[in-house]
Image (cartoon, helix red, strand yellow):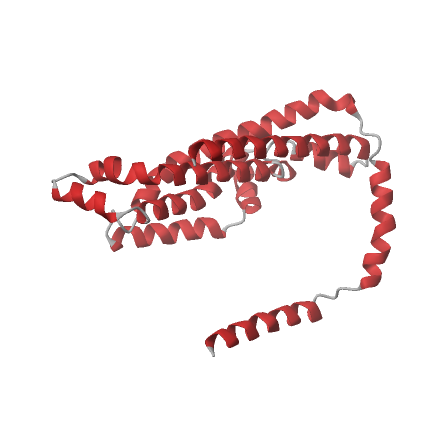
Length: 247
């Protein structure tokens, strides 16, 4: 009965979304020629901007790397504090609530706040990525701690090991592959998110995309778009290699 109610609620939500979304097939039919015209204007890509393009890509990469690094440092401490295995409820519950609050704030909002606080450039992008990624990574780290086998930790506890020793010798060897996997995944996500931060002035290649599209320089926008696609594909290949190495 409960399962039937769940499926009924999901079906009702889908029907409600379809009926109230004002989706007209005629608009989709008209969109095809307009999209084709837009793509034609982007050809051929203008490669004369390759220096600006590389400058924007390297800045985006720096934002993703530093944002991930700082979020890992913060998440290492917050992950321990959010662990049910290592901490009392009076500690891990408020910390997990804080992490949920961080995750609830959209990245673009965080970026705009950081731009208002520290100005334009890569710094607000780094701060926004650090803040937003910490909410997810710390949760992942805490769950990795809580999912380890209890027996090795109990053996260390019976031998009089401290909390730090239990973490170092009983918990970390089990959770290391999961931590590396989640960190690599988060870096890939940070890189993708860094690509759009320039839209609000937080540095990176997004600023160039916004500038070229708004000034109707579609050939230059096409070049930047292709460079972004190449960067994302390379990051996926690198992340796939790292995941295989630690699995």
